[in-house]
Each structure stands twice: as C-alpha cells, then as structure tokens.
Length: 327
Image 1 (cartoon, rainbow, N blue to C red):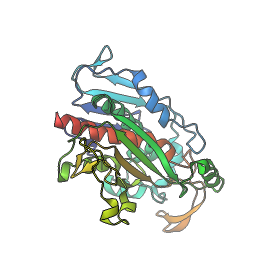
Image 2 (image 1 turned 180 degrees about the horizontal axis):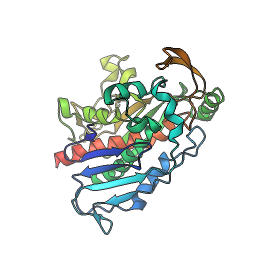
Image 3 (image 1 turned 135 degrees about the vertical axis):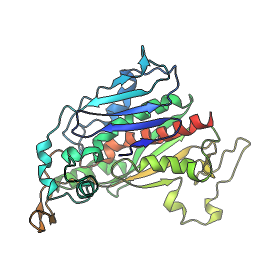
C-alpha cells in the first residue's frame, strides 16, 4: 500500500483500526522544535469520543514519540504512534460475505484478497485520523509563528443553524441513522507565495490530503460552488490596499495556486456515517441474494463532530510541506 504524502515534509501513515497501533512517520521535520506528549493533548482531545453523537469506543491515545532528544526534534524521522486498546473484532466477522453499504469491505477484499482483515474497518477506518491529527500537530509547529487556524462545523444534516445541531443528531440517533456535515477551516497569517501553479498549487495539495480522510466527499475553497452562481462583477475580489487585502474573499486566499495573504478558506463535506443501526437491504455473497443487514458495534452518529480537527490537521500538513518547499 502507498500511504505517504508530501515532499519536504513527508508523512507515512501505518497501522490499522484493530492492529496493535496506528501512527505516523514524519520526515523533514526541522531540528529544534519542541515536541512532547503534552503538545498533542489539545488536538487529540478534540478528536476523542464522548460527546453525544460520537462512538462509545474510547482510546486513551497517549502519543509514543521517537526522533526527539529531550523533547526537541533533532532532524531525524519523527514517529508518533498510538496503541489500540479497545478493540472488538468479533463485531466485523459477518461483513466478509455481507459487506456493509458505502464501506470499503467489498472493494478492499477484491483489491487485496479475501484474507484482508476487515476488523474495525482496517486502514479505511476513521481511527486512522488519530495519526493525521498527530501529523497536524507537528505541521503547525513547522509553520511560522502567527499562523492561526479556526475550524468549525458550518452545516450539519442539512441545517446551518448551530443552535439546532444537537437536535439534528438526536433525531438521527433516535431513528438508528446518521448525519453528515460541512467543516470550514480558516487559516490566517500565512505568508504570501506558498504553492506553485498547476500540480503543486495550494488547492491541489490541500484537496489531495483532505480526500484521504475517511468520509470526506467534497472540497471547496473560498465561496466554492455558491460562488459560481454569481457574475464575475459580483465575485471578483477587489484589492483595497497596498498589502493586497481584498474587499471580499471568494478566492479563499489563493490566486493562481499561490497564497495571496488573505485568509485561506477551505471546506470539506463529510458524508453521513455509513454504519447505522437501522437495518439495510443489501447483497449477501454467501447466500446469493439481497438480505437485511444489521450493523452492530460502536459507531458515530455524526462523523463531522470528530473530523473537525482532522480536517484542520490535514490542511496544516499540506501547508507545512509547501512552506518548507518555499524555504
């Protein structure tokens, strides 16, 4: 499997949902960066389960770090891993013959063979985002001081009224169903000039890694799809001062694939969780017919709740790679 991303800041993800651990190896981390377990706590806490609508599976996610000397990076490869302590592989045995709708069960076994372990979703599981979040912590330390990330859920289950988000989750849970959402990441303080035209554009790099996050099905920058409904005279970002500040930000802080000094704005569409409690009619390969499937186990009602920090981390990884390339 090819599970690497980046050129100057190069990360490799390893492990699986029910393997002994999941983690990330990061090459190109400059020497002299403080990196201890406490540096990861804030972002890991944002990913942990516990809130309404999240999975009952709880992992301590204590980072095991190598590639540092007394808590300071020394230029070697940095490895951060997390033990999987709360696994229940018996919940997944039926899916070899009765694959779950909108999961990778069938595609994975056809690609990698019938021996491929579907337990916990394997490497396709949202559990892998613990490693992505860890990489994001390192990435944010590589970026220059003054770069600020603000990431929030702007839409949930088709509702944009944040005061109603809890009700949307409760209704989906009560019906044995799930809800999707839209996550917006805003990055301020980026230097002008990150990115290159075409294949190494800021949009290309960020979209590439965002689509690696399980459940991300759409990415847009600036005003995105809504912006195409405007005319050019309405959508164009007028420059209003010598610093290049624009009156609007439909471009999302990027021109020609290059950061322009205005806030970078990117959104990710997170699909409703595919594992739902309600029965689903889907093909059983052992019996050769469509049969009802009930998915047990422990699953999120709304993946977007815990994916927020993963989206931020992924954007940070792409930006750190582009920043080091510019250096």
